[in-house]
Structures are given as C-alpha cells and as structure tokens.
Amino acid sequence: MNNTLSTVVKSNELIEGRYKLSTNQHRLVLLLISIINPEDEDFQDYELRVLDFARMFGIEGDKDVYAKVEEAAEELVGKTIKLSKGKEREFVAWFSYAKYKQGEGVIIIRFDKSLKPYLLQLKSHFTRYALDTVVRFKSQYSIRLYELLKEFEYLGHGGSFFRIIEIDDLKGFLGVKENEYGKMHDMKKRLIEPAIKEISSYSDIAVTQVEYIKEGRTVGSVKFTAEPKAGKALVADEQAMAAEHGAKEPPEHVAALLAFGIAEPMARKWAKQYGQRKIMEACGYVRAKCEAGGIKDIPAYLAKTLEHDYHTAWLAKNAKKEAKQAEEHARKALQEAEEQDRRQRTGQRIADALEAFHALPDAEQERLRDRFAAENPSPMLKSWKTRRANGEQPEISPMFRLLFVDFLDNASKPLPV
Image 1 (cartoon, rainbow, N blue to C red):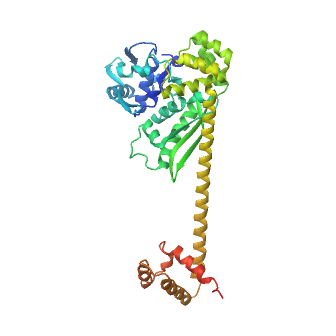
Image 2: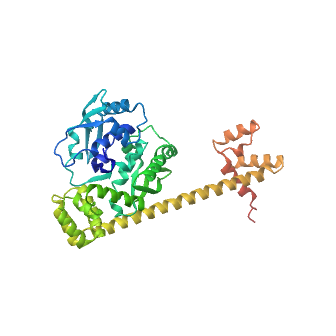
Image 3: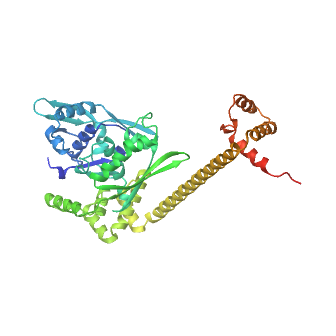
C-alpha cells in the first residue's frame, strides 16, 4: 500500500455527525475510506492486511496490533453515527460485516449500505484530504477536530481561515458525554490543547489561535483560527506525488469547481477567465446556498454566480456580521473588565476601612458596633448580636462587611450645620 496515494473523501454531513471512536477505530475507518473508489455505485467487500495498517500508522512494533485491529473491526459492526438533517435525526452504521482470517492477518470488511450517500458518488458538500496527514495522530480527538477545521479551509481561499464551534456542539462532534469535562479548564488541558498540538505538528494545517468566547461567566464557544502550511518540504512532497501519479494535481480553484461537478475543460476555462480569488469566493457562496437548500442545478447556478457576481453581497454581509460579532465580543470583554475592576476597588475599600477600624481603641470599636446595631434594625441584626456575644468580630462577616463600611463612611462625615 502506497501512503502518498491514499485520500480520504467524506461528505460534510458525515464529518458533522455525532459519534465517538477509539484511535484504532478511527484509523481503521479512515484507511478503508481511503481505498474506496468514490465513483463506485455500491460498496464492495474490502480486504485489508493488518501489516499494511500497522505500517501506515507506524505501529509495526505493537505486538498486539492484530488483536487490536480485529477488536476495532468487531466493535464497528453495528456501531452508529447520529446525523442531523434539519429537524430529522438519522442513525447509520459504520460496518455491516467483518471477517478476520486467523493466521493470515487479513480482515474483510463491508461498509453498511446506509453510508452510501456519505461516501460514494459525492458531487458537492464533501471534504478531501490525504490520509498521510493524520497517520501520526495519537489522540482520537485530533482526527475529529482536524476534519472539522479542514471542512472550513476553503473559506480562507488558500490563506488563514477560522471556525467557531459552540461548546455543546464541540462535545457532540467529539463524542464527549455530558458529565465529562465539566470544567472548561479540564477540557482545554486534556482534549483541545493536545489535539491542537498534534494537528499543528503533523498535519497540513496549523492552528494559529484559539479564542474561548464567553457568554456571561462561562465559555459558550471556541474560535479556532488556522492556516495551510507552506514551505519547501510540502512543495517537494506535492511534486513527488504529482510525478508518481504521472500528472500534476489541479490548482485549488480548479479542484473546487470539479467538486461541484463542473467538467474539467470548463473548469480550466473559468479558472483563466475569472481567476482564483473570485472562483473560491463564488464556490464558498454556492456551497452555503446548497446547505440552505433550494438549488436544483448547482453547475448552472455556479455559472450564473460567476457571471453576475451573486456572491459579492453575501461576502459583504458576512464581513458585516463578523464585524458586529467582534464588536459585541469587545463590548462584553470591556464590561467584564470594568466589573472586575469595580469588585477589586470595592474589596480594597473594605479591606482598608476594616484595617483602620480595627486600629481604633477597643472601646471606640464597641461604641461604633453598638451604634451600627442601633441604626440598622433588621432581622440580620440577630446574627450580628449572636456573633458579638460569642466574642467574634461580626463586621468581618461577608453578610455585614460592606454594609458596615458604608456605615463607617457616613459616621466619619461631619454633621450638617
């Protein structure tokens, strides 16, 4: 098996599915997807040598690899994925059949037919990446987060791009249970940060920034900013791959057109006529319209978009929306900073006032405590009197300290003439 030729092609609906797989289950699924012919009309029985699996993922030294692959295949038979389609929920299975040939190190696997719309005959709404970009991942979460980010890479038009994911959705995508990672700190340290490290270290994209967006006092969503890696090493790899194929891969904007079902001669003609930037922007617009529904003839609509610039108003609207979101986040951040400053100043005021009060002679302290009780009749004063009777300093209690400091401020003011 040649690693560089292995490509994973998945529908975006499948990437957005809710499921949880172990690292080896992920590896097995991705390796099998990479050997599917996406143009096939139906699945076949796919034969996989465990030795190829071990070599692909660099685990030849694992003595238990045969047992682990057999176990992963067995568990994936009937294991389901939850897919959302508007108000509908669909549950599909990974494998319908698996057979392990003892002593031969060979597994025969059949994808469940319910996956056909998500792996075969894909003309739009899919994400493609080379399998060798994820083979060094150790964490099950790295693979899922990589796919979720890769799905949005086209929005960067070859440069930086971002994706905002709500915390509840992120947990659902990664298969995290409701009672897991209750604290955001734990989720960051044990899940998000290790996945980001692996993605940036080993894949073809690098996560450049992670922003935790708060809703009130809690984090409501995470914004991941990433960019494709560029460098001599990657260019050399692409050239070597092209030579091995006997032909150079099409440019990104041509590939984007091909993904929408545009014939290659027409795609290359449009590439010369409209240029990379306009094509990538138009493809992004058409993809958004497709996801919203209502487009029957995608190639025809894409042609009209390029001719009449349908996408320009959409881009401006998105830019305005992002600017408004940024303004709202800045406003909330300022409010939180002001509130924190106010709390700090109030805390310091209380600490200074009580320090000055406790520096007074004991008799003066008792006189002021008596006066406070006399001027503030309320049910709370029962606790005040109880604490004094026990020899405590009731003014240091959170129940009384701000009220008592306000009283001290008023008591220190001269009486009006």
